[in-house]
Length: 222
Image 1 (spheres, rainbow, N blue to C red):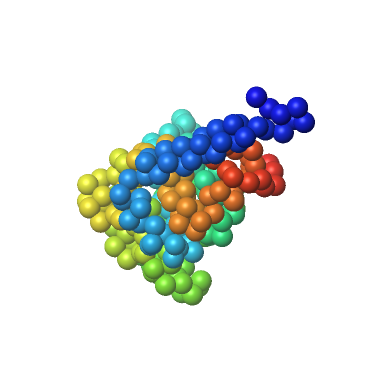
Image 2: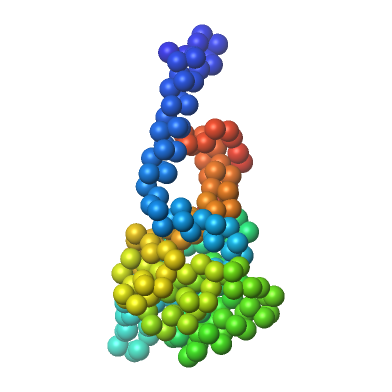
């Protein structure tokens, strides 16, 4: 019961603190050993590079009778990318295919580096490192198939999706619980955000009243 002045009672405050503690504990339990083991690597990351087909999408490619290509992107992945950018990490794509859908999605998300038609992804990756004066330890890459292996074995944090091929999973530091195009990118973004200690600050911008937060924050629109 609240006090007559409208303030929460001691019992309500205690219950609220217990609820926040339980939520934090639940979140920690949901993160496995691989997640926690990758946090030191993730703290060094300044740039996240993504494959497209099989990572930002579920690897399906749809064609109309006229030959127009369609791809489906996850809005949750998109918000994860935006949150990661807010946390100070740049995001880009390196893909072997070329498509207007990718160009438009990259523009919507304000991606810093967009390389399409990359027959040799390693060449594109090394060029980005030179241009941005970055070391491999500062870059994370997420791919799902053999074309991604040359990058995955060189970056500071190599990630892949739950439905990636076995050879890719064998070299990845982190394998997401979610498949490509269905939240895998969001999961990796949350790992990088947590490593930088920015999760609660970002959440407070969107919902300062969230029960997992101890304090307030400024609201923000999507």
